[in-house]
Image 1 (cartoon, rainbow, N blue to C red):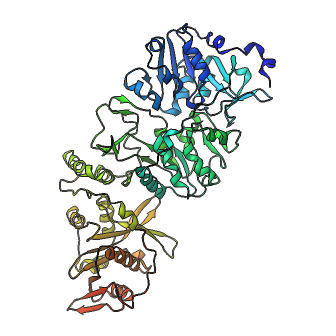
Image 2 (image 1 turned 180 degrees about the vertical axis):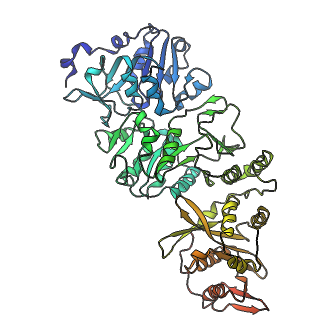
Length: 632
């Protein structure tokens, strides 16, 4: 459609269009990369504009003016999210931040809680039926446009045409400004992927299963870790913003959207922010289905996606699980954005959960992001009840359904090693944990990732084996209380009745993951894991380690004991042991059989009630390793 022929009275230049904005007007501007740059600059440069109040979600172009006194005297900025370009101005008090959930912003417009006089938007050229596309910015732009008294649109041939609820008929627009220019690009933050990002990406990939539907929050980190999901199969996307971080997964077909339960086959999103390559990818691509934020971010809509995994970031997390994502103390840094909407939607999703990912430190490693309590003035963007999983480069902390004690231990365990002792001390002072609680190891235990293995059982279940951590105390306790009296007797040689905190502390005190090691076997019970086996070795004499293990009765006879023995041997050999020694009751024929099958030439020393079994790793008749060795 040629708008000059269809509605010539609407087609004006930018100067005439913005002259329709009256003094004291409340002006809405389209979001981020979809903002109408030419209209914004023309409005700012028109000196007749006075006492104008601007509402915008993500602002880019206005950052060129926000340090000018003349601009600040004429314009007042109200932002729902503080972009990187606006951060310094926010710290200096030059803009005003409106904290709210993205899903609720359209309601603020529709209800007139925030009244709008003018909307400045950017659209693609109209098709033959007169429909333009809001392109990369549907989010709150549609509701802003629909609730403004006057709509001025910049028609830009470079604006991608997107599918979904992005279409605006030319009749809905009051003034049209024809102006071609490049769309705003936001790409630099995704270029750097350092070792910290790699490690966080590795941990995220461990908890994201094939066929999950994922949401990716605002910010550098969530998008930088996306490429580490490239081996996943049939992922789906339901997210507020599409960025370049998703391109590798789309190109490698890791994202197919085939298994989505809500709008299968399509990426559901609200806006797009990235490079020209990304804009070309979404242009007229029916895979992408754009809707406004009150739909995409509605927790009840999000929950209609089974297995929805929300991935967002934070500035700091306290030991109880409270998350701050929008301020550094009293300084507003970003925004609440979509985090809470998606955390709650994920919690309601069948099989869904949420991840908050963050580096363990800030300011070049001098400040811990896992903190005893949030900084003075920091806002609680996400409550402790909403948080599920927290990930740093040091591991995974599962918080949902856990006590303050367990949360403090889990979070301390994934803090930077140099801050762990002071975090434990602070937790003791606050009465979060036991007064005699041992701190996690003060070293980087990334090498323990190499000790993680899995075993497929004949019954179809998969057992994950990994080292025992201090945060496993409650699961460890529950495991022992689930055992039958006979099993406990075979392991400890007496009818042990109590597995108290003190008993378990002694176990942890001996584990250094080198000379003394404990492996646990875990199986999934719905989304959570439970311990079904524990195997340990401890330093003995003559270059030997004393080995012992116990398997829950319903998992005995499945080869788990043999598997643990082999894995412990691999680790023990790395730590310069030459063999194992074990003490077992005479009547424990099953355990003796496990040892003899692995070490045919084992030497058995008999006493009145038990056997001492000496096993050499270089036993010439030992069978080849049957199970997969860990990647060390």
